[in-house]
Amino acid sequence: MDFQYDSALDNKDEKKIRLLQILPPKEAPSFSVTPEFVLTTHNISEVPKYQALSYTWGPPEDGIEAYKCEKKTILINGGLFLVLSNLMDALCHILQAWDSADPVPHIWINAICINQQNPIERGLQVQFMSEIYQTASQVLIWLGKSNMESRTAFDFIRKQGDLSRIAYQQCMQNNSGLYASVFHALCQVLNRRWFTRIWTLQEFAFASGFDGPLMICGRDRLQWRLFYILGYVDNEFRNRYLEEKHSGPLAGHFWKAQEYWSIVSTLHKMRQDIGIGSGYHLPYLLQATRYFASTDPRDRVYALLGLAEGEYRRELKVVYEDNVDDSDDVYVKVYINAVKCSIEIDNSLNIVALQTLQKKIKGLPSWVPDFSLTNIRGYSHLLPQDLEVPQMKSRLPKGFWAQYLASGRSQPLIRFSANNRHLSIKGVKFGRVCEVIGPFNSLESYLQKVQQCTSRAALRRLPRGHPHRGLHYLCYRSRASIWRVLVANKDETGHVPAPNWYEDVIKAMLSGGHITDALGVNRTKTELPHLALVQKSLAAAISDRKFFRTDFGFVGIGPDNIKNGDL
Image (tube, rainbow, N blue to C red; front, side, top):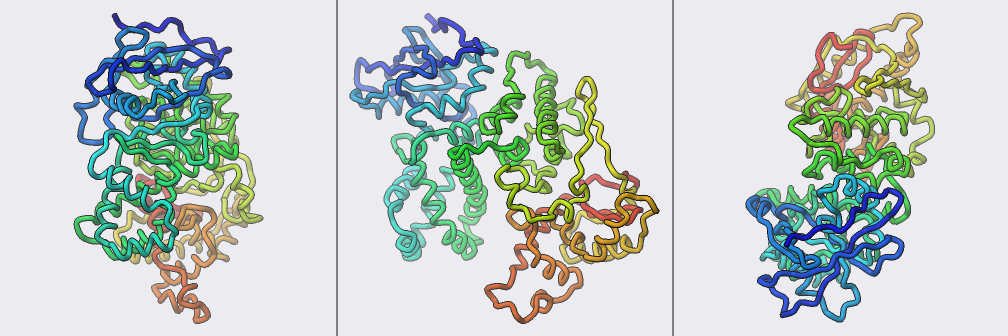
């Protein structure tokens, strides 16, 4: 007999959850014994002590797609219930590690505790999923079965986690061969799909306890705190090792590790911010999680609501009851609502900067980004990241808005059509594009062309009455606006504004001179700004972009498809 849910949790006025109660096995736990559970319903304010599981629905690693479709049977309330193989593996390992004297015989698992066939219930439960993970006594992160690499990584972290920074680095310097094998093993662990699954963000961020969630890989267990501390302490030494070992069989793993650790840092920072009660602006969340994937395109928005500021959570509702057919209309509706809500709450068009040239979902208006695309930068590198986090706004220097943003302190005038398909905004005409430069093949030739283009733009005079006639004059008089355009006014880490010393470096690059001559002899070698940092900022801002000039004498960087005649 198949399992049937006894009642639906579809009353929005009640916060109830189901918990899976572990039944003592009738024989020694093993992978050949069918696990048995009891499913009970509780008010979230009166739940017994429970753990919450965070895992991937499909295969835990790449290259095992057939594993995704394989289903296994468990018993719930005496009825048969089918689960995917990865969840079955997690349940079996949890049962094997569980002590019958453990006072935590309850666990929350979304695939079981939420009726996935009831879209109303599913939407309501997702709406307060952050509270479910926050209420849990412990969050368990299931990374998948163990292998030689995961055992090597976990064993090393456990042994080295308590060493001081100096002792740890001395250990690594004296054992470079060990370091290379361990680093390779860590990269393999970080390559598991849990680290790029969109739902893991709030499941991880709301985990309670100083040590954070418990990471499980087969029989190996490790507290997140040790895992993260090792990566943080190791960062400086790892970068030096990376420079020395830029070629060879492990080089690919080292470069991948930079991306993996940035994901780990994103996870950790979000947990810290949520811990002090800080919610995020939705554009920032969408931009910061562009490497994270979801099976359902709607979850690229829904999975982030628990991390967003309260106003976003109140205005955006999780709705799964709309039928998903062959068209993309359901996804279009969700993305339009998310962008419209963000524009109205922030009174800003920043979220539109997440736009990409390619779109997978058909029917999206031109002003609505396709959030289903992962690992696509779009225009997001032009977003001032600090402006997207509320607590960071106060750090901007006085007069920043008027000095570096063409719109100054003016507020956008925005209007949506009745069907929300069209967005109308009021702007200032800066002329038509009359010259385009890029994409660049070499930085030197690109900057030389920029210099020539800028010189032609400076000769132009705006007509009388133009609202930015004075601004045009000041821009070319100070020249600061030119180099800030080239780096999108962001430093090498992506934060606003770019430091003033960038001007000396870029000015020397534009003139073809030597950097040391431009900076003067008063700077010591350690104070000398690295040319590589400026080059990194330039590449981030203008790769896949084109520098342009308008017939009114303004310059800027635009999308790759910009052309002469564009307004």
